[in-house]
Length: 326
Image (tube, rainbow, N blue to C red; front, top):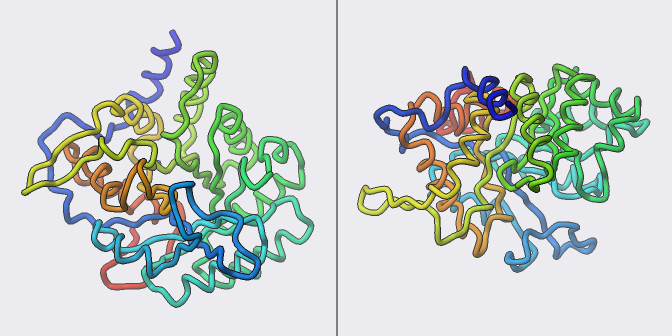
C-alpha cells in the first residue's frame, strides 16, 4: 500500500531518465551551486577543510575554476562551511572579485535577536543568496524549529526572497523540513546531498511516507550530489562513447528525481568534499550527471544543470558564458 502511495504521488512528475531517444546535452551550460572555499593557513584556521582525503587545508577559486571549466561548468555558488559569523564576510570577499561565482550561501542563526539586521547587512550585496542551517557545526535545526523566534527568522528570510539550505539529511531532518514548510510555506528549502542518505530498514516505511509528503510540496528542493558513488564506477566519455558505471545507483536516483520532479532537483559538485577516492574530480562528477540525463529530453537536463538553481537562488549572471536566468 505504501509503495503504491509513493508511486501515485510521483506518477505525474516526469522522470529524468525518460524512455525516449537521447538528445544532445554536451553543450548545456552547468551552474554548480555547491562549492566550498576555505583556508586553514589563516591565523584563525578554518573549521572545515574538506574530507579526510583532501590534503592541504586550502580550497580557493583559483584551484576550483580551471577544473570546473574543463567539466563544462560556467558558474558556481560558494557554500559556507563555517559557523563563525565573520566567515560570511571572508567568503563574500573571495567571490566578489571572481565573476565565475554567481552567488553564495552564508551561515546565520535565524533565532538570534540581530538576525534580521545582520541579514540586511549582507543582502546589500546581491551575491548573498541565502543561509545554511541544519544538523552541522553543533546546531540541530530539528530542535530550533520548535522555537517561534527561529520560525520568525525564517519568515524574514522568506520575505527577502532568499533560500534555506540544510544538511545533513536523516529521517528527522526530512520531517523537520516538512514542519518548516507548513510554518513558512513560501520559503525555498534545499536539501543538500540527498543521495548520500540511505535509511535503515527500520526507517524505510517512515522514509517513504516522508517522500510522499515532500513530493506534494513545491518549495522543498534538493541537490543531487555524486560524491557517494565510487570512483571506479564513474562514467567517462571515451572517443565519443559513453562508458557507463551508474546502473548500481539508478534505483536511488530514480526515486529521488521521481519524488522531487524535474523542477526541484539541482546539480552540485560538493567540491572539494568530493575530491579523493570516492569521486576523484569535478570532471567525473559532471560525467556522472550527464550520463544519468543522457537518455532524457534536453529540456529536463537544462533544468537540472542550471535553470532550477537560477529559479531557487536567483543567482547573479556575471559573465557572457553564463546562461541568462529565465
